[in-house]
Each structure stands twice: as structure tokens, then as C-alpha cells.
Amino acid sequence: MKDKQPSVSHDRLLHYLQELYQAAGLSAADADVCAQCTVKTNLWGVDSHGVLRTPVYIERILKKAINPTPEITYEANAEGPFSLMNGDGGMGYVVATRAMEAAIEKARRFGIGIVLVKNSNHFGAASLFTRMASDVGMLGAAVTNVKPNIGMPGAKAPVTGNNPLALAAPIGQPYPFSLDISMSAVSGGKILLAQKKGEKIPDTWAIDADGNPTDDPFKGFAGILLPTGMHKGLGLSFFIDIITGVMSGGPFLQDLKSMYKHADEPSLTSHLLMAIDPAMFQSRESYEERIAAWAAMIKATPMTDPSKKQIIPGEIEYMIEQTRKAEGIPIPPELIMDLTALEERLGLSEHLPVNE
Image (tube, rainbow, N blue to C red; front, side):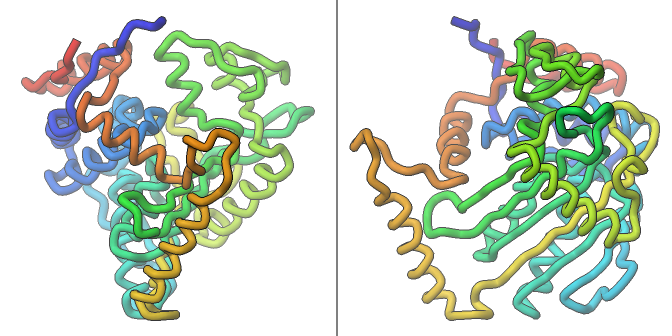
């Protein structure tokens, strides 16, 4: 049985991250966006995209690979339902939040709002932004492109990125329908987390730089991730790169930059954020009644164990959130060391308030 990891309460972690991002040069408002996004991700149990990413984000801000004070502007169709936004190299959390806020406002006016974004950076878990839509009674979608890191067996180099797809909808439950999937068998963040925990990885997650199966998280991360569903995940990743990088006028495929391998350079990532207002197609009351019936049908699925119920995407994250709000968010010891080094570097008097 593994030793229990140190933990920190979500509210104290939020305050700590706000201070950390401000010390790195972000405004109080943008630091709060970054902290909120991080803590939400960890509360949902998506540790691969939570506080684990903070050291590399802060490092990139300090190196000016991420613009701490971006001027986020529209490049096309500012007033219409479909717009193009330039993130000015800002934090992906900040840029994508601004874009989804705009998409939601457009959906209130037109029934649908789509904001295509160029010149951004890694934005964490894509479901952060789709849940912004579901929180206000809308359906949300989010995709982004990243530097190629997946490929099929037989490839000598990665051909496309593990470009994520997130979808969300309010379903009359304490949680929304929320699906957030990358196009690799697992995200690179999970392999990084295995590195931090000193764990092996399944040999179906990645191949090494020579194309061989591996259970070593360091060789796997340095090699090629395998796509989910093989040709299915590969094809979806290709299309996401088309609808983001190609359509926005930004870089695509090998012209993108990895935030790990090119720590001194902007990633130049493109995103697409979409919101749909169901009230444009039927009354809100009708939607709520129909979606409640939909959820009830899902839950009525017969199970081999009568004490079990069919899980809806988003439900597990809700259950983890309740537990972590009560018990705290686990933080790997090696990550605590990384954050402590950042505190010292930034001259921060506040320390990560962990419970041993």
C-alpha cells in the first residue's frame, strides 16, 4: 500500500497560486483566472493538468515565452456569431477564458457563438472552458492543437498532436455532462505524473524514440504517444489541427512549439471555443424537461450488479470534487520541491500550506 501523499485544502491552494502568478508578473485578475483554473482541475481529479503544470507555466512566463500582460484583440468579425481572436501570446488559461466568455455572449445573441483563437499557449484541461458554458445553461465545445507527439506504430516520428476535444451540457444534475478526451491513449501529463510519482506506465501508452514499446515514463514522454483507438484518434487529431491551426491562420503540425522542448519560445497554439444556447431551439423549460428524461434513461441502464448505476461523463469528477473539498488536494512530494524552489526564486514569503 502506497504512503498517503501530502495534501492542501483547495481554498488555501487557490490563494497560494494567486500569489505565485502575481509574483511572476500577471495582473491580480489574470492570476486569479490561472489559480481558479488550476484548482478546479485538481478538484476534478485531473491531476495531470492541475498544479503539476504550474512550474513550467511560471518558468515560461519568466522567460517571456508567455506574455504576462497580453492585449487580447479580435482580428475578424468581432460583432458576429463567429470571430477570430488574437491571444497576443498570453497564458492559455487567460486567453481561452476570454474567448469562451465571448462565445457565450454571442450565443445569447445568435443562439451559437464560436471564437477561433490564434497566438495562444497551452490552456490546461479543455473542460475548464466547456463547463463555463454548461454553468450558464448552454452546451459547450473546446478544441486546441499542440505540437505533434503521437503517431501510429511504424512511424519514426510523431505526426500530429494529442489534440483534446471537450464537450459539456447541463443535464439537471449537480454535475454537467462533461467529456474531455485527448487523442492519445493518455495525455502526456499522465506520463509526467508517473515520473513525479516514480511509477511505471502501461506499454500501450507510448513507444520510445526508437519505436519500441516501453513502460518507462521518461522514455515514453521523450518518445511517441500512441493514439486512442489508433486510426480513430489519429483522424480526429488531424481534423482538430485543421479547424484550429489551419483555419485561424496560425501554425499547425510541426510548426507548433512544445512548451517543454521549446521552453523559451511561445507555443503559438490555436483554440476553438463554442457555446450553443438550447433556448434558441426550444423553451428552456422544454430543454430542462427533456434533458432530465435523457439522464434518467441513462441511469436506468440495467447493470450486472444491481447496486451499481451507469456513470455519466462528469459524474466521477463531481464525486472526486466532493471528497477533495473535504479532505484536500494531494500534492506529490517532488512537486512540492519544485514549487518551493519557485517560491525562493520569486522571493515569495508565502509557502505551499501542505498537510503532511
